[in-house]
Image 1 (spheres, one colour):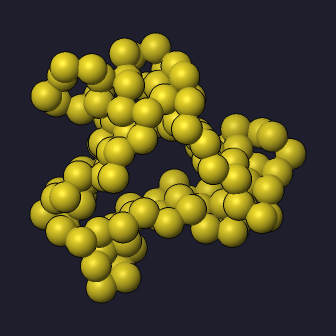
Image 2 (cartoon, rainbow, N blue to C red):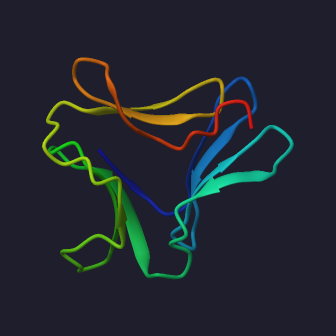
Length: 106
C-alpha cells in the first residue's frame, strides 16, 4: 500500500489523517488541532507506504532508506487502521497492535 503527498482521510468522528504536501504525516482532532506528527515536513518525503515486511515508512524520491518509519519490519500481513477515536494503529496479522500514534481521544 502506497500513498503520495496530499492524501488525506477523515473518519466520521471528525479526526483527520493526512500525508501533507510537505511530506509530514499528521493526525488532527475534530477541532482541527494537530495532535501528532511524524516531523518529516520538508525532508523531501514523497511517499507513505506500508511495506510487505510490516513497516510503515515515509520515503523521499529515489532514497532507499526511509526518512521515518515505525520500525516494525518482520510483521508480514500487518495492516493500518485509522480508528474513530483518532488513533492511528498498525496491527499485526493476528490483530495485535505493533505501533500507534496514541492520539485516541485527544
